[in-house]
Image (cartoon, rainbow, N blue to C red; front, top):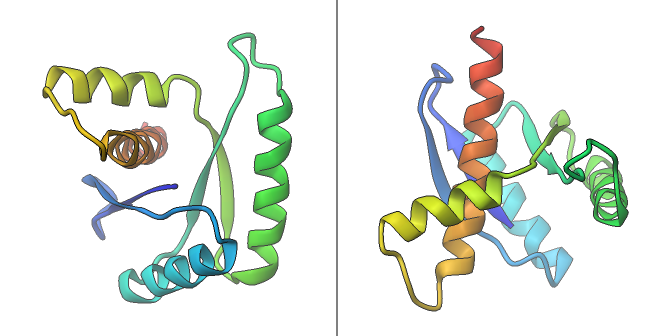
Length: 125
């Protein structure tokens, strides 16, 4: 899973890292470590939606993931429509000529940053 973070002023977003989702216990340990280190106030999780706005099987998996995460972490968790964030991230990395084995990790981190930036932009409107 891609992780991104913003500055204290909630203006600048940067991709932070990629954390493998499995094994989940290891994922959760690393996430908790980041939450402590960075003093995170909100966890934003991308909610996959179909292009027509409906929810599909992937959204159900995310809802289940969020439910488990809420049991393990006291920080508020919010979901946000993630449509086209991966497409934007792929386009950005292609233009930057990023290749290689870590491309998936970079796509996930970049998509997380795009999602977070769109959330912050919506707060400042």
